[in-house]
Amino acid sequence: MRRISLRVAMALLTFLVGIGVSILWLVNRSSEVKAIENPPCRSCSQIYSTSPELPTVPFCDFVRNPEHYAGQVIRIRALLNYDSGQKFLYDKACEKKTTEAEYDESMQSCAGVKKKLDTLLGQNPGWFKMTVDGNAGVTIIGRYGRIDNSRFMRKGDNGFLILCVERAQAVNETP
Image (tube, rainbow, N blue to C red; front, side, top):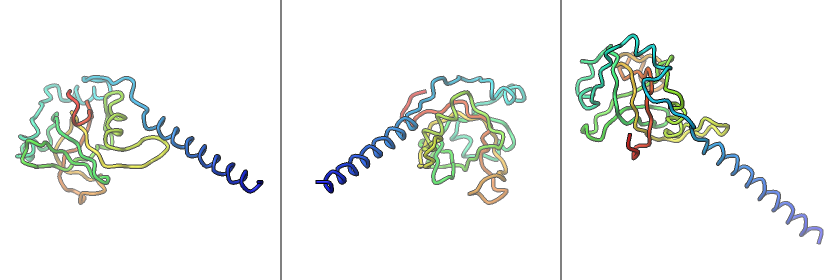
């Protein structure tokens, strides 16, 4: 009898620990961003002030001739894919052309947008640091040029350096 009650107690304890961990994971995972600031936003104001006529370039135009935009600060709407730590931009309408992307060391974002982007890309910012691949529709400001801070690109390779994330949304979400 004592042996059975000990087994039941151990099974109940294991079950309760499993439920507790599951609840913590769900609470952390579902922590949604309450307020998202729409552009133009305060965090990116320095970029707006240094580039008053910030052009929005169609991604297909950019990816066909990125050198044309080298060094220029531009706005792009595209899909950002995060694959095992490597980031690249693409658009399904562009004949599967992509460009490497990386966050600038001083990257800014509108309030709440970076947290939403991290969630969409599977970058769980909570206590359980598990990274999963993902993608998101983004409106970003940046420039094409040499990227030296990437773990995946050879030092000095060219790509799109993200200076500001204005919007992030699920791929099937309408803006």
